[in-house]
Length: 511
Ligand code: HEC
Ligand code: HEC
Image (cartoon, rainbow, N blue to C red; front, top):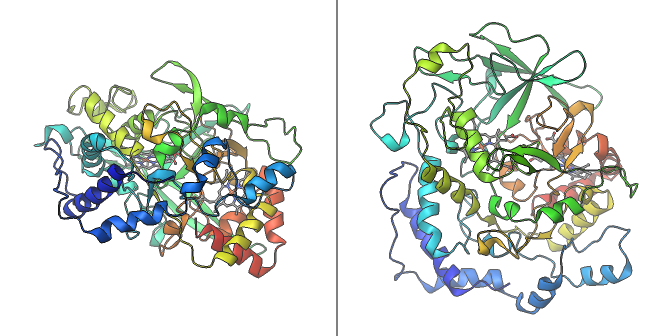
């Protein structure tokens, strides 16, 4: 759909704003709104590219409810087949929220259709996202209260604008790009929370408060498959040995592409994809994760995190503030200290709560405002071939190519967008090899299908890692680890010729 004028101007404004901003936070001050009068015509024409050739498709796209790629799965009926073939091959992956400029820093960029009126709120949220928080009492009141037990000082350190934070570092250390959940497996196969260390390990702390411990990794190669197994080991624990049966749940920090668009997919649309009993017999079931929504005090659809444990971006943010940074907020007002961690409980507070209602709202709004980098089309014929293979072997059964967002999101600019995230946001049983701990109602081997858009930016980094715990060194390895409901697709991929596998991966590196 054509990008309207105001969003063009907004994009230009955002480029300029970005040139002026740096990662040094200055919250509390108004966002630097920059005069756009000098923006050149070249800047504007860049945005025309996004909307070119799209105008004829408007009516069609508006009527289409759920869209899939040009190459439909085999079981589609003929009528649908024909309409799929008529689709423009590559509509922008994030609809009007697609970013077509500055691929050097693909993540954490505002969507070009973010209304000007919301720029201030989103910019303030950005400042809080990039800021290094400090211990209380600090000289910047808005930003104090970190810890005393924490994993990182800022959201940005785990979700950097360039891609992935350090994960498995040389010498067996683990970087901030992987954090550790904990679960205790009881004799009856039920799971509980570790009483001393809680649901997540905090490996850092301030002086006077012992940190909880550190995790080290070692790898062993499977001689048959060539895949690498990673063993994580908890060491230097400060509060006594964790309960017997404690299992680590490593979680690699995901990129935050198009969070608002994922938030705007109708719950009914996601539920319509569920097939818990596999009634269609394709070997893929998939179910929504029903989780406790703290704010409404009811069970709701979880959609964020590797196991879809958070219902909203606000609760995801509040959870990160609490577990990752030791900051209280209106959603989680209690300090993240266990009863036996007295030094933690006695540490000075940065206010109650430490992150105000307004700060939490603007941080969540910042996430809504994140756009989606455009595709990179380098060889159309080859990519179409790769896409056909992606469907042929059954990847699209979980990594659903496309969907149109609903009409009910409070932020109207996120509604009615046809997007290409390659996920169904459902939980799938991925087999024993990928299993770790239970979180909420998601069993150890159940994982939410991760979106695949923009994966190429992660893959282009020298130390790229994939899957929830970073065990896969390449996209190829990530696919070979697929088991459980994805066994058939994995087998299908394995049976492709070497060039076909490369073609499929080339396709993934274009979306
Ligand atoms: C120590 C590293 C770390 C810090 C700090 C951190 N995150 Fe995360 N973030 C993660 C990890 C790991 C996950 C995946 C968690 C899971 O699977 O449950 C995640 C998940 C998310 C998601 C959901 C992504 C998705 O694909 O569903 C959002 C949104 C998010 N974080 C936002 C934030 C915000 C906002 C902050 C700052 C308040 C923050 N994060 C701080 C590591 C971090
Ligand atoms: C049954 C559902 C299902 C099918 C079928 C499936 N996947 Fe996945 N995929 C997942 C889930 C769930 C994960 C996350 C697993 C984990 O991290 O442990 C995943 C992870 C990935 C990742 C890593 C993403 C990242 O950010 O680390 C890639 C790449 C991927 N899948 C590609 C494919 C391809 C290609 C196919 C077809 C050969 C495929 N998948 C088939 C569900 C599926």
